[in-house]
Structures are given as structure tokens and as C-alpha cells.
Length: 366
Image (cartoon, rainbow, N blue to C red; front, side):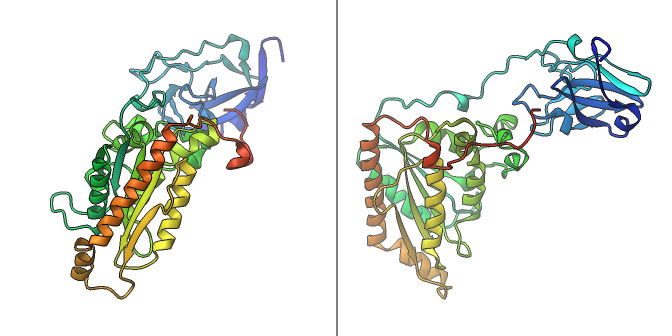
């Protein structure tokens, strides 16, 4: 319209909202209006393409709804300290009650070099023996630890793996400070990133240790959990929700981060539902891409009425059979890992082998 200018709507109507998404010549625009003055910048965030037009305003800065990157609503320049990051801005004016935007006079998009997170490096197994990580998901006081049957059996499993010539490490979730999943996936599948959005934004979040072990270091992952009201522990589920970023790479990028890795489980509870807990864990770790040995878990429960905790403790602590069973579980997992390491890893997945339909965002471009 009128040479270089495109009409995007009524000034009176558009001024009713501080920030909104409009389209001019197929270009998505984050149009803002503060004190009667309009600003127009490209709606795609520099980070991972989040929709700035669906964000919020903090003063004169548009805040991306996905990961809170900020850009000036009129100039497109990043917030102080990040001025080298800028989204295109467009001249905007009001004539005869209409808002006009000049798409052809856009400024250039510029990106400040950002050092990739260490977890973002290519997945490549280093030479060496089979590596086994144990994840203890029992919740307890950090400075006043108590006996945990699932943790004790995990230690026996790791000892058996070490006796097989494996490298081992133990991670206690109760010793890590990490945030709960904050639902980036619920904003958009593509807002759930690898590495995890929280990990990239918060260098104090300690789940990095788990990501490093599962994706880059370990060949075998042994997960130990108590049964809490018929389910795995709260720390297990807190971790599992944060591992969605690993599974989501298959959905958004056809990228398999978990390559030729084995998972097995140790489940102990004073209450029952062993098979229900095992079923959830098997289903979840299968979705991440793990393989399982024959008989992939060991478990123990004295049942619903066994409230005498001292006897529950003794039943696990003093059971030669349970500790030997934990060792045999580790050996089965290690043997499978050795066979897998002799094959080429799966780096992509046929859609029909998992979720048959490709991701359809049902959203317009940012």
C-alpha cells in the first residue's frame, strides 16, 4: 500500500493493547503501543524463535514469553549488556487513523556470539571401559542421612559393576539443588530446548550433573527408588519432568541423544505396587531411548500393612539374596551395554517406530 508502507489496522483498535502480533506482507511483527506511540519489531526472538508479539512489556522492552529475552520495542536492540543482540525494527506511523509499517526499511537482525553450553556438544562416547552411573532418588535430610534400602541395593549393584572392570559413579538427587520443571513445553514444544532451558539460564542449577551422566558419560544407568504412596519418589518425578528436554529432541529435531545406553531399576517399598512403579519407569526410560536387559528391575516390598519400619530396614539390609540380585542386575545391564557398544548407535528414529505423526505446531510463524 502506498509504495513502501503497509496498512496493519486501525490505530484506535491497535492502541487498545500494549503488545500484539500483526502481519505485514507475510512478516510477523510485534506491534506495541505505549502512551499513544507505536513501535514495530520482528516477532521472532533471536534465541529460539519465540513469539515476541505474544510476550509482555517491561518498560520499553518486549519480554519473550518463552525464555524472557528482552528487546526494545521500537529499536529492536537487546536490553543493556546485550545490545549486540537485536531483532529487526520497522518504521511505523499513523495516517488517517491507520497504522502503517515500512517492511522494506527494516534494520538488520544481529546476534551476539553466545558461548554454547557444555552440554550442547556433540554426543560422542570417549574410549574406555563400560561406564555405570547410579541414580539414588531417595529424599532425605542432606546433613542427617538415614538408611535407605533402595540406596543400599544400588551401592551393591555399583560394586558388582566395578568388579566387572567398569567405571562407576553415584549421584544422590537429595544432594543436588535443582529447580522443578517450569513448563516450557506447555508454551510450545520448541520452547523446551536442549540443553534444558533452566540449565541454560541458571548456572546454579545442579541437574547438569545428571544430564552430563545420562547423555554424555554413562553406558548404563541404574535408577533406585523407594515406593511412596504407590509411586516412585518425589525426587524421581522431579528429575523425570526435567528429562523431558531429552525426549523432546526426538519430537522437535528427530535427534536421539540417548545412544546405545542401558537402563535398569531397583525398587524398594514398605508399601506395594512394585509392578506399577516399574511400569512407569520402563515406559519413561523407553521414551528417552534406553535399552533394557532381560529382567530389567529388582524389587522388594513387605506389603501395605508392614508399618514396622525397623523390620522393613532389616529385611533389606540383611538380605543376601537382595544384594546379590542387585549385583546380578548390574551385570546383566553391563553385558547388554557391551553388546550395544559393538554396534552403530541410532542417531535418528523412524516416526512410525515411535510417535508416527510429525510435530504440527498449529501456530503461525513467530
